[in-house]
Image 1 (cartoon, rainbow over the protein chains, first blue to last red):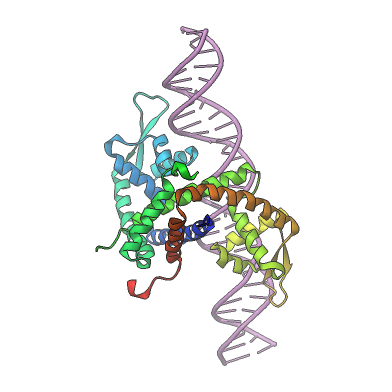
Image 2: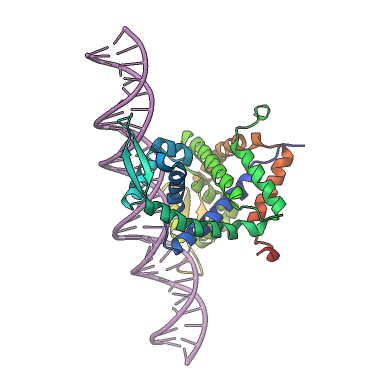
Length: 149
Length: 149
DNA sequence: CTCATTTAGATGCAGTTGCATTCACATCAG
DNA sequence: CTGATGTGAATGCAACTGCATCTAAATGAG
């Protein structure tokens, strides 16, 4: 029972990622909608509701660098999809809030996004395989079991 | 037995991809080496040997847009890692060939790349799980079974 | 309180990407 | 041969990214 080659996982994972991503991005562009980076931010803001989110919180949720969030938020604000509100209690900070236009756009994007994803992923698997794959991918995200490092 | 949600696969896949990718890129940068896009191209050229490769062939292998290959090749050429040779038989084309320096760099990169990948992936799985995951990811790449579309 | 350190966020600059266009050669119909 | 169409590759421009740095406010030691 020899150690398996991590590239047997990485190579198909990377290719699958690239190919799914580009098909979804193409569908969004085709529909005249923004890209997935915008979607992810809009979605997090929608989840956060009236409380909004601080940029540094988004940074963790979206796995983006600090300046990435700063500029992404700039663009979304310029598009009217979010507002920056002063942060009571921390003069350095700000709170990002979704606007109605932002929510609207997110909803439109969702229709396209979910449909494209459905087409890109579902046909390849039986329900059992899909469940198993989701489970195994999940293991990549959790911290590794201590005894295997 | 209802249809599974493709996002149960996509979300962990995307997160795993981003997190593995950034840890590997960080390791390469840390070692003062170029990024994975350079590696991929160098590797393909190495596989191609003396025959070399046409840019449009790399385009397919690397899933890059035409201008992406054109510019990536520019940079690699400027670094001395490949040479462009006139293509006998097609006056529009060219043949890209790996140089000794390119091969050397690819080898150095491989040491770092494979080690980082090992650390990022292996600890999360038993050998059986790894095999199964590789197999399932492979299914995402092959054309979908006709009866499931 | 005062000064040093840390944290939230913005930004200038250089390098990279996406898009559309351009150029050059190839191919093919007539 | 001649012009129309197709294909391989480069490039100008605008948008985006990474990096390093910068400002302002918070925190914390003395």
